[in-house]
Length: 359
Figure 1: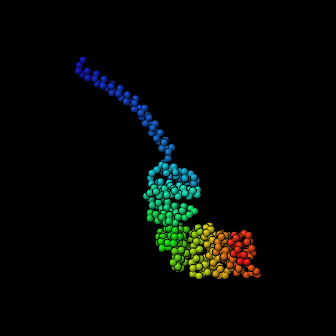
Figure 2: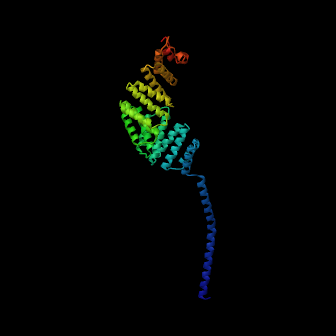
Figure 3: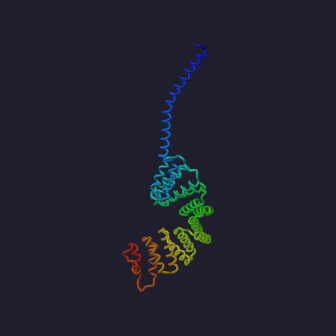
């Protein structure tokens, strides 16, 4: 056998070995590729069966918009379990908090809002909204924590939200808390900052002016009070409570200046605004009673006092005012509350004693 023939035989053998090896590799790779393909399909299916945090955020938002509070809350919880992103966590907790408020689960709403803040969102508007949410919840609780409101209002303001209505609302709530704490200079600074934000929301603008009037009343700056009240009324608030609060503030300012006719007119207008806040309505009734007593309009004072007592039957000042008004009404005999739609049996014992003709 020649040398060439021997080499050809070696080549043939080598190629046959390579083809055999290739067939063996293919026999192993084919099922492996099939398994890889099946795994890919399974992974895709798993991804579709397990939605992302974004999916749940969108679902929670839509449910919240449709008033499906329980579904919004459940979707928010599902999304929270899917992410560690601070802004998504904050947004999901904000929606959960809003849904809990609608469900009147105030403690859960507060916890969700605080968790949203604890996530340290980098979006200033989101942080400000969460702070506003906590302030709103604080107002719904049986005991209002003014220090907590001050803390979160300042946090929201310091986040420098670009939404001017959110900023102005936070300033308004801060001013209100400061007024209740007797910190009028700080309240004045808060209202100034809120007004400088130039809010477009009518109710927020009107409320800021009402707080400004309260601060100016404290310092007896009557012209500034009147200017603030006019600006608040001109803002045309849609909330009857805000309009009534402005008129109550105006009545108080006139009362402080001894302008009883004007005080009476403002109090009447405030009552006619039909506020839903029963405490505010009682204050307006009391201001109307005080003005009518000073003007010796006894029958009107009597009616206003009775209206106030319907709201708060144990109000000692109104009991005294009603007794005085009844005494001063033109009469043939002693004042008798039964002639004015009230029987002594329907009144508390303390009130009966004060209104008794023999007292």
